[in-house]
Image 1 (cartoon, rainbow, N blue to C red):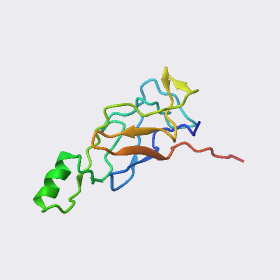
Image 2 (image 1 turned 120 degrees about the vertical axis):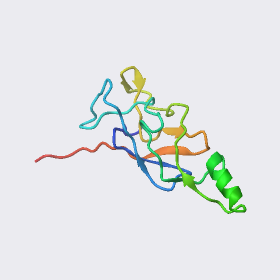
Image 3 (image 1 turned 135 degrees about the vertical axis):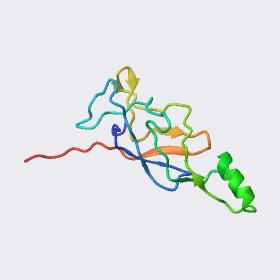
Length: 129
């Protein structure tokens, strides 16, 4: 089942050098105890998914070219996420504006071979005395 993800969730790509934060736009927003709740369709590069520092995937043409120029020494290049499909699998039971909610067990694939996962879902319960 998993914990629902929200705007500000910390993500990581298997070929990225640094974590990134999920951005959920306030379109048809449903709050998750404060931040906007995410759906599997919050997968747009540079809108929802920010870069992960440097990319180390040889499937990325920029990394391949820089590595070839460095005589085969892996040369990371700036990450530009390329996520053509939605997050999968999403929540089987929670729907947000007609789309499955994003949870911490969902993955989003980058066209350069990386698998993006949720490290910290971005919603926390605060106990108020």
